[in-house]
Length: 288
Image 1 (cartoon, rainbow, N blue to C red):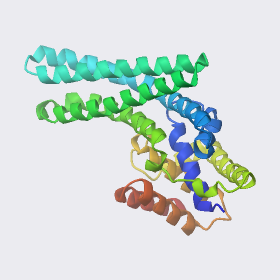
Image 2 (image 1 turned 90 degrees about the horizontal axis):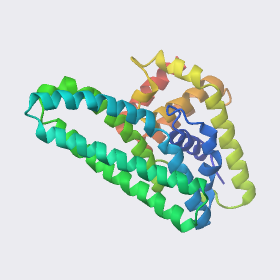
Image 3 (image 1 turned 135 degrees about the horizontal axis):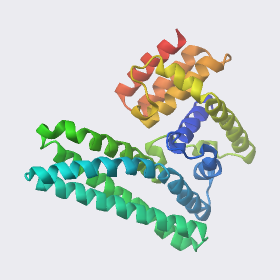
């Protein structure tokens, strides 16, 4: 039998994967999301995985535009200085990997739209995941290289920020392949179709409530967190804060203390100890 914690964790997972800041329509992810949680057919699961990868990848273009813009400006400056060849090479290599990632996503999108064979879809999904893994390493290497140029720190900051924002898309893609790295295993609710249906209905009700009140929730959080902007808060933490704030402000049947404690415990499980303290402090202020 599922518990309220299961509903909370499923809702947080949905909010995390939906990436509300990317501009993608969150409910276009709904059926795919539930297939990933519940589906036991490998064939259907592979199709759902491909669709989820494409959904999450919608967060790349706008972030990539910013990276290219800032990197172009930076490269002009670095080439003019004449003493940063290592950094120039590292930036160009990363941009090449970003381009290859785009090609892989485009190929997967085309194969999904054309309804190609399951084997082709699976292979193209694996290419995207492999490119993503390579990109994570490349970005990390670049960030290490950037630290060797402390005098150019201010000029490098826009590029560093853009890399970190793209990194959040990569984190989501990684989590699609390893969902338990983000949110829990729901295998224990696979006991009956009636229970799964009920679990989904309860979770969707919570998600819809959060999305309906998203602007109000973010406004509340902005009043409590200095310089608050959704994209400046780690995605998992952001999802937890939105859910708990919704419960505190709109769910009179749930004790405030329970909502806060549950949010803190979920943060400890899926985020960091620092995040749990941060979330605890913010939610204490929400209830005041």
